[in-house]
Amino acid sequence: MTARRTHIVGAGIAGLSAALAATVDGGEAVLYEAAPHPGGRCRTLHPADGFDHDNGTHVLFTANGRALDLLKTVGARERWCEPEPKGLPLYDGRTGEMRRVGLSPWSWLLPSRRPQGLTLSDLVRILRLVFAAKDCPVAAIIGKRPIMDSLIEPLTVAVLNTPPEQASAQRLACALRQLIRPGAGRLLVAKNGLSQDLIEPAIATLQARGVPVLTGQRLRNLLIVGGRVIGLSLSDRTIMLGPDDRVILALPPYEVERLLPALPVPTHFEPILNVHYRMKGLDRPRFIGFTGTLAQWALIRESHVSVTVSAADTVVDQNASDVAARIWREIAPALHSLGLDAHPDRQPETRVVKEKRATIRQAAETLPQPPLRPLANLALAGDWIGSLPATIESAVMAGEHAASILHHARGTRATLSKDRALKTEDAA
Ligand SMILES: Cc1cc2nc3c(=O)[nH]c(=O)nc-3n(C[C@H](O)[C@H](O)[C@H](O)COP(=O)(O)OP(=O)(O)OC[C@H]3O[C@@H](n4cnc5c(N)ncnc54)[C@H](O)[C@@H]3O)c2cc1C
Image (cartoon, rainbow, N blue to C red; front, side):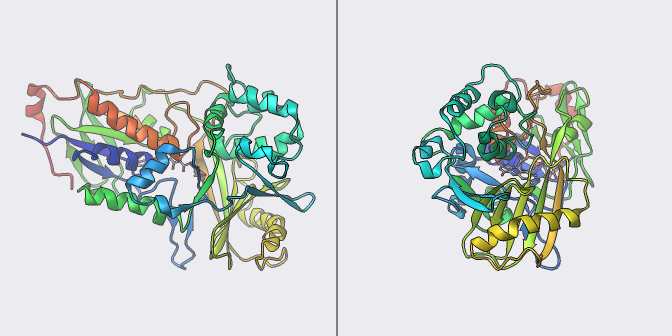
């Protein structure tokens, strides 16, 4: 009898999540990844000069239950910490003032944790946003009010990576409904880095379950016969599937479109720009928000400071050194006030990472979505699938869902006559 195997293509968060789900009860899986390392858009870069940093800062909230469950499964929950338990420090670049803001509305009961300018009528608008029945841009509900600058815009670009003038109110509402639960709005970051605190523990867990992780293996083509996948044409080999084998494509939408051109997929993306300054930081991570500046967030680590600019369409094509210099001048006073040796005129060694297709554009419009199981034995996963914001949480959910769909689906098995035409090679 041939073993049933799940072939997962793409070792980003969705692929790792699918592989963990497919092997939870002893199932067999193989993971194929085009890049030299797993992690996809959520990874640590290790340049030759030793300046290790993440591609870009990733935060989780305590509301992200599936992502936190995955961390527990791979023994890495304790590696994620809450850098600002007393509320997020927000630095206003126009006034030079730093104040703390609570991310959960419950914390706003304390005046010292309230977003600047919050009024009763803002609370009504926020409630309209949270329970938006029809989709429209976030800005159409909130309007041009101080709260847009001090809370809604930073939150919208952080969660949806899309400017509030375009961003989908309903998608943001999905996240806000989770965040308003008591205890759900605590912000977490990886203590050391994304690879060390998420990707490597996930890979170690998979390897302990006997899952081969084959890097440098780009899926070039799917071999399809009679509505099911019979083979995978990879960078240096072709894998013929067994009659019970299944495939999960945990890929970005443009790769799904290339492999299965008939499927409708989202085609618009938004960039995120990250600037990393190599300098002595602090013993434990700190996290600051910025308003009135190009910089939006800064994560302070022991050996560097990482700055994020989401929805970075207007700056991503500008000269990287100019952008980094401008951001350094903006953030140096805030870093100095936290005790770092930072001066606007002394910019440290800098790295700029431009993720041009960081996420899909999550505008207030119906995004094209393919069927989740477009072929009898193939399911799709990825952060862009479904109506939740495209984040680690949605990637984890999509991976688990794809594994579950194939596990429960009828008709994934090849018929006997087709079986005879198949040849099974050992993928590992
Ligand atoms: C700078 C930045 C900051 C972010 N910040 C946050 C944050 O704060 N919080 C949060 O929750 N989310 C954040 N995100 C989003 C988060 O990174 C993504 O939602 C998540 O990583 C998506 O995972 P995925 O597996 O769906 O896709 P991907 O990570 O894109 O994984 C797809 C994988 O498939 C591989 N691949 C592609 N084509 C092929 C092929 N033909 N054959 C084999 N392999 C292939 C790719 O190399 C990749 O490894 C951020 C993203 C970026 C870029």
